[in-house]
Length: 109
Image (cartoon, rainbow, N blue to C red; front, side, top):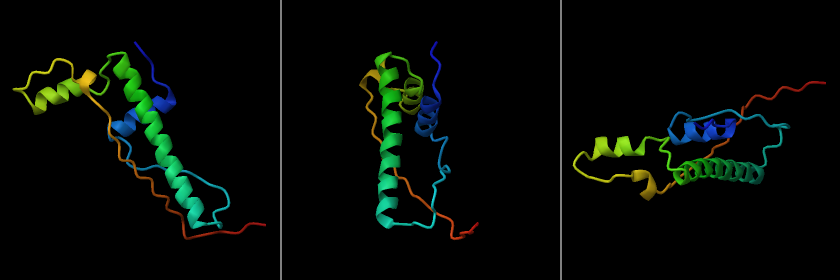
């Protein structure tokens, strides 16, 4: 039996639609450079995609169906006979990261 790391658990939850949004904190919120925000969004999407692909293909290689693909396939297509859905499955991800900031800034001295 395998144990998932924290990153793998995040990926598992993303792939099972258990995470829809999250919170990240950045320093200097007064610097709202559009180009930097776009770069942060791209980087965030790439990181999420990477951890999700690594998890999926690691367990596909081990032939462990942690996502219950076989069960879901059989429920959706009860008359089709495919013995090992996991081995023919491919992962296709469309990840969008949107950074939203607070409009309230408080100055401290």
